[in-house]
Amino acid sequence: MAAAMKAQKTGLLELRITVDRWIRVLATLTEETLTLTPGEVGGDEAAKSAPVPAGAVNGDPANLASSPVPETITNVKRTVRVTKQDVGGLGISIKGGKENKMPILISKIFKGLAADQTEALYVGDAILSVNGNDLREATHDEAVQALKKTGKEVILEVKYIKEMSAFFKNASASGAAGWESPPMSPQKQAPTEDLKESRSVALKMCQVGRRQCPPDTENRYLEVTSADKRTSVFLRAKDPAMAQAWYTAIQAAMLALVPRVKEGLKALLAGLEPKHLGWITAQGSEKCLLAILTDKDLLLYSTLPETRESLDKPEKTHPLITTRLVHSGPSKTSLLHESDLSFGLRTGTKQGVETHVFRVDSPKDLSTWTHLLVEGCHSAAELIQEVTTACSWNGKQCMLGVHIDEGFTLFTEEAGVRRHVLLHQPFERLRMSADDGVRMMFLDFGGPEGEIQLDLSSCPKTMVFIIHSFLSAKVKRLGLLA
Image 1: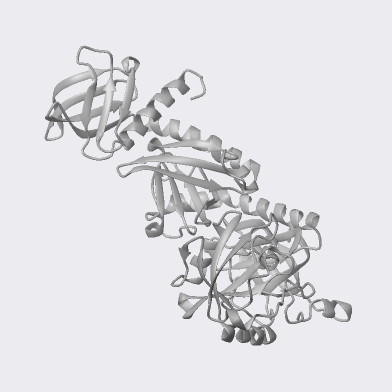
Image 2 (image 1 turned 60 degrees about the vertical axis):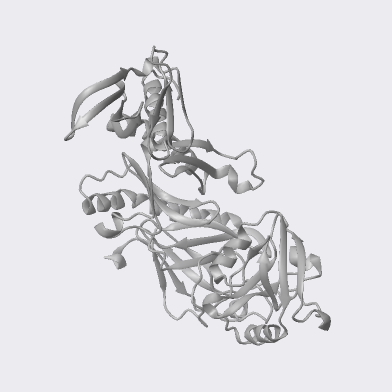
């Protein structure tokens, strides 16, 4: 069936097969797959895709810094301050990590970028810490994330290991070094000498994003990763316009498959109604997550769930009735351009308030998530209608019920049946609500009983956020923005 599918788009692109090697491929986009086929090249074209010289990056001419290393610094701890550039970041690549039984090592320093400008860092330097964060027992991925999360000013504690510098020179000449971080792309492919057969990426809920790749700052790269994250391709077009055209075409093909994905999820779990789904990036961890919005929850997964068991076990669940959108777009304190495409959520839990910031790829995605999350919180409040919790009032054990229409009720309960109503007040009489963030919630209805002090025996933020959601939904009923 796949062979009979009509190609929606074809063209020549370059595929990165190792950190510093690219080959030309014929890209074919159908309704369900992106297929990359190695091209038959000769003459000038063969020269373009030939192995690059040692020290070259991304197929460009050699551009690595190579400063002589003073003998006096060998095995001596040093502290180096690096000021990140707007383009190119720190300007280094790293190797090693705990899983490789190696320290975190600088394997490349790019000419003219931030690390090179310090004139104090060298290939073979082990990074012991970054901004005080100890990396001596870090895995490769942990080190990459620690370096990514730094601000503009970065303090590196390093120690030069002469033996490692010699190893890098040998590895660069042979092309082997499977545990090196590429300059930008977070998805790592096993190194291969060449692409012998076609490589395909399923488009069903694939991730597609634009990437920069220092030191070449032209915006002509894109990355496509399958929904199970087992297949990832990093591609380069001849110019930014072609890269954008491929991005748009792949994104459109993926979105066309979303209704089929929703039906598949509904078939896995009866009663599940996915309202919206898409990839978002958690700011801080930089982890890409599949977000599924239902009528009651925002569910986050590392990959597309293919079984009922995996669908039942999201990495994180944000109940919409205890969640609120706190910002959409640039945050007041952020200096990063990517923050323009981020939104922030706060969730009330029994452990306190959790704050999460997520980044999306386009203004359209940001607008969609912003609108659907606000609507989802209101809809969840209307759907759930009432929440009850155990509490203590004036030393008496009882239950607090909060109903979107009937308001607040304190009552005693036996065998799940309400026996005696201690107090009832509608939402309209609520003058003030507060909490101590530990276990107490305070409600004032202006009645003779004065301020009501309720001991919830755990952090009251869950109930505080639920009350806010009910109030917001009631305001929405009036046709006002909440």
